[in-house]
Image (cartoon, one colour):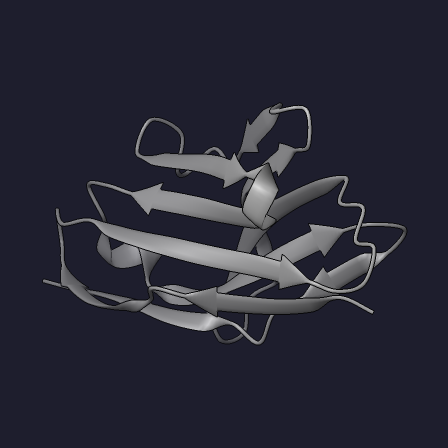
Length: 114
């Protein structure tokens, strides 16, 4: 079993920055990849960014050039640096961890105000 805990969400003005963190813990956790997805009411959950244990990254088109994902393998932690935030970035952000299956965190709210 893997526990996933997110932190770092909050309220920020448009153009500002936030940094999200996600830590995975559990017995003999062998992580293949970690990442972030986001969801707003009435819409499907969408990809924000993912990173494999080998450091390969993938970004959603709407965040390319503004968001950066990074990892600390020793801590089983992934970070999402979000810059130049837009109103459309407002969502609940979920951390995803892939081992032999997917695990999800409870989500953290990011609200971008004008």
